[in-house]
Length: 277
Image 1: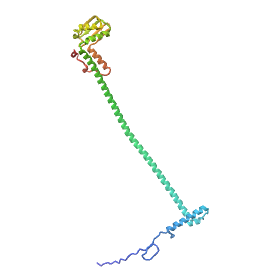
Image 2 (image 1 turned 90 degrees about the vertical axis):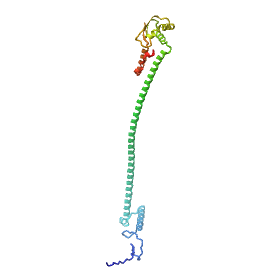
Image 3 (image 1 turned 135 degrees about the vertical axis):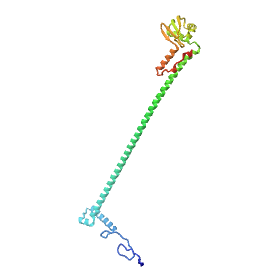
């Protein structure tokens, strides 16, 4: 294959402006179609503006042909266009600013509304839950107080019965005190029928003697043993009425009293009177 030889020569940059000495480069300035540089154009525009200002202040009217030839009309039109553009830009910027502010305010207001609705919904749910909890607590408290009140009534009833039973065992003179009390209540000492159980019947002579010593002489008194009376106590009949003061009747009266306040009697409230004799 035949060798190809290339001749390489140095390249010399040429100036874009007027021809100069070979190898030298000069500054290039842009010019208009009339060959004027930017600096020259600015000076001319400044001069035209001064002429316009002098004409305006002195009231001297420049001929339209001169105005057009000197570029005064073109400068005025450019300034008008520039002012119009600036005014349009200002108004657009103002509109954009107002739109942004309005959008921001509407966004903030919408955000507040959304947060308020969410908060209100959550608050309503919490209020409902709180109301239910309060109602449940009050209901539970009412039940607790009711139960405590019933327990207190039951305690009082049991203590009352215990006191009556305790009185029977204190000194063995329960029948004496009971008969004396009944005679005082009937307000009579004559024509008395005293009914007791078999055990108390055997003690009645001593009981009558002790009672008469305290209340006075009893006349026309008859004592009977009533087998229907199973417990301690007396049934006293007089001209003023009948008083059933048996222990069973006293306990029944106590039960009725507490039944009236809502405490129902149960089997546990019943007393085996045979154990207390």
